[in-house]
Image 1 (tube, protein in one colour):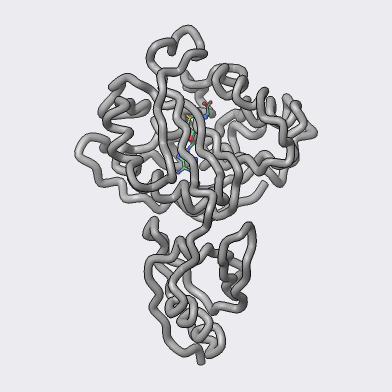
Image 2: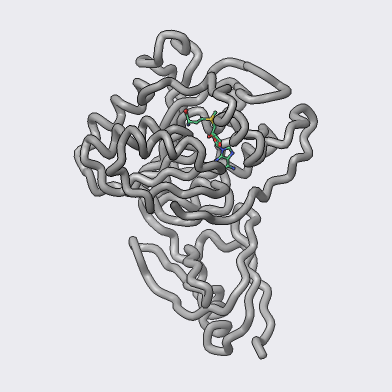
Length: 282
Ligand SMILES: C[S@@+](CC[C@H](N)C(=O)[O-])C[C@H]1O[C@@H](n2cnc3c(N)ncnc32)[C@H](O)[C@@H]1O
């Protein structure tokens, strides 16, 4: 299992005063207070996976918990299914159920610190588990993880639910407001295949990343190239406000998009960078 990052979010919020951190979620698994757990893949995601022919798709399941959908996808033959969760407690059960699931695809860490490129990201009771103050950060971070044409799909509650503790719900109008402007297209449609207790209370989310990568301005590209040539130490602020530090060691094209690599191995898509500050490295 891979351990990455730390929980970096700001706990300040008008309504939720709980620290929804590793300890909170780990304790829920240790005490068995896992009311959200369906004991199998959710029907909407199961049926979505059933109709995907390409088993090479890179799939991420954030906040995957016991990862029933990941196990299902793995058994269907999908080879690149990754799960990230703050705690490894639920992964132990997954590995008991499915010992051949690749351990290196189980990432223990903070979704907001995670980097990668995926063709599909599956949402299943992760968005509703987050402090609502983090919703705008969720929609800013998702596009940084999606390859051109990639999709974030899954279910969101169409129900107000709680205001002081998870699950936090919402409505189509609220979600449309939060997701606006971050994807090439976003739709929220009433979910027709929810499990019985959630019937009529779920929306099917489909948010699509633009197929075409919009190259960044040439003069901006030149500044990255110059910083690389001069081996300047750069601070790169991403569109989702995460900051990366290091020396740019490579600029290249992958998946029809422009990327850079820092000396610590971090790879960043150039259109995901909002600001660069630099100083000459000694
Ligand atoms: C309500 S549970 C849902 C688990 C699973 N998706 C399911 O439906 O059974 C929310 C999960 O999100 C995880 N989680 C919460 N915040 C996270 C974060 N910032 N990064 C990664 N995982 C997180 C929790 O540890 C927990 O396993």
